[in-house]
Image 1 (tube, rainbow, N blue to C red):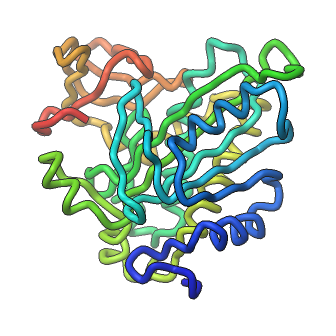
Image 2: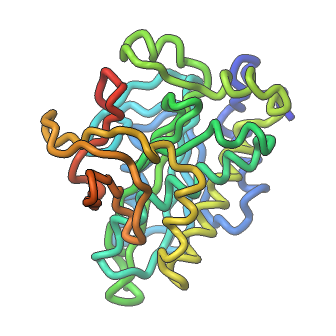
Length: 296
């Protein structure tokens, strides 16, 4: 339920109240901070992970009401307004060989999508999908973006495969109309979902952060033990690109056209072109539904 500290429009508590509530909801996160403003929550956690001193026991969570230098995939920067987005990052220890680290990006997206779907009635859940490799969509319009970055554990790594993964997310709360106009493509926000699904009106920002952080925590633990063998099946249930005509873009040039066909256990997007299926790696290209008129 909304606290007395909450903004009536957004349900965002003041930073101190957010932090206190999250510390209560996520007792297995030894370090939780929520600040009014920072340059980048992902950048801050990366710097901490690389530092030779400081808190070594993870997971960590850092959220901010405003980011001055928020980053997206491929180094893209993006603007945000106070209260218009729900933005936070988490840091986890993972024990994986370097060749498997790129697969953490789609895994983070799948986990977050599953977590948000859990709030929805069963008949509404299919409207919330994932666009490979890291966007969440409501009715095929972007709702949230996820950035996954990995670094070596700086101090006394426990093994050669010991890395720290930083996962950040920015969820549009109520600014979709302005964003849609400025970007010339439809953008979704949480207020639109609540309008479509009134039973969500009592869900708070703390509820959303808690559910996603728990999902990431569970996934990062499970992947160390079991690998990525169930990732294709999980993605299939939330796939926003399946059987859609796609153009694979590299430097604004179409290099491949075909139909979306899920992902493999390496987290690569599968694009079917006639009788041939191509595997596209995270970070190599961007994906554009053929019907769209702007880049993702």
